[in-house]
View 1: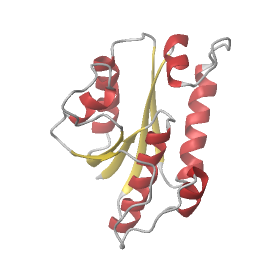
View 2: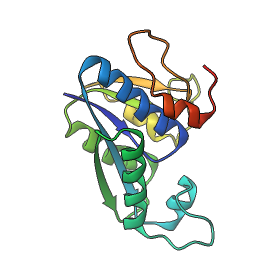
View 3: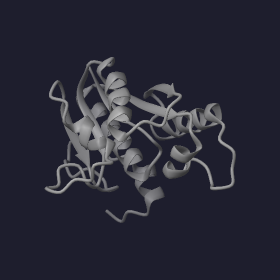
View 4: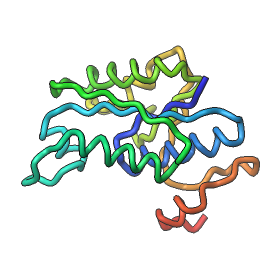
Length: 165
């Protein structure tokens, strides 16, 4: 079993990856980041992978995401899938979920500031990932160190984020 993190390079996805590694070190669990990259400029712009006037190089984007995972958690695995279409969030979530399930996760660490709220946006991939019942979901809502004394914080990550905790 492993801890799986859907990873799109956002601040909360980074926080989820770091939190998974902190808990993974404490509980002797492997960590895998999973990414789905639709081959469409619009999605890349929405994710902040490219600027409005920039061309979209899918391979370069995958490489940047992989490199960021390696920077944050050098021993984490990185799995990705390229898809041609720009499907609705539910279908993107299905691709992510399939990648996650292939890892036989014990827990999925999900970086999201809106999963679990009473009113949830229909465009949240996280909502769909969290709905899967075959694994537990750990929602990371803040880029702050863990509060458990037995979990060692990733000091460099929190210094980068400017956290004073």
